[in-house]
Image: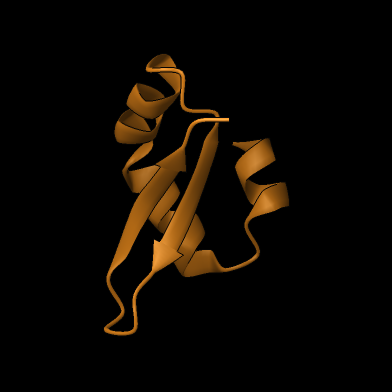
Length: 52
């Protein structure tokens, strides 16, 4: 979790990452190394991934 805390300054986004850690690990296991946490204009939060 230290890396997440260092990289994510927004506490709400950090909380999302921690609560959805298993989903994030799934993206990593699938080879997605560029994972972003996005927030829409309505406040919804989700992971966005792209292959490099």
